[in-house]
Amino acid sequence: MRKIVIKAGEVEVEAELNESPTASLIWQALPLEGSASTWGEEIYFRIPVAQELEPNAREVVQLGELGYWPQGQAFCIFFGATPISGPGEIRPASAVNIVGRLLDDPKRFLAVAAGTGVSVEPAEHSAG
Image (cartoon, rainbow, N blue to C red; front, side, top):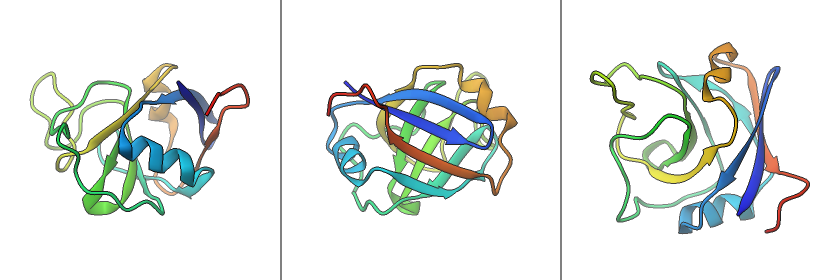
């Protein structure tokens, strides 16, 4: 599994990328840096990866999943409800490719404000 480290302000968490085509493109583009945009309990930022929706793209995600939003060309971190979530669900603005998951408590991202610098890089002990 390809492990990554996500840093946003004082928050630093480990995560892992899955084996999807989109996750592979993100892995090849590392390290990534951006400025956090927030939408409810989601952080996203634009990355230099262009990819279409994959066949298994989802409109509802799970707590702690990482996604790629093709419409915004953005890396997404899901840690709770968004403005359009129904009861008990996490709903992105539109379908996303699931590219991985957080290995630490997703709720740590509640401390991250819009405009905070975000970086994603390979974990030192990761096997690519």
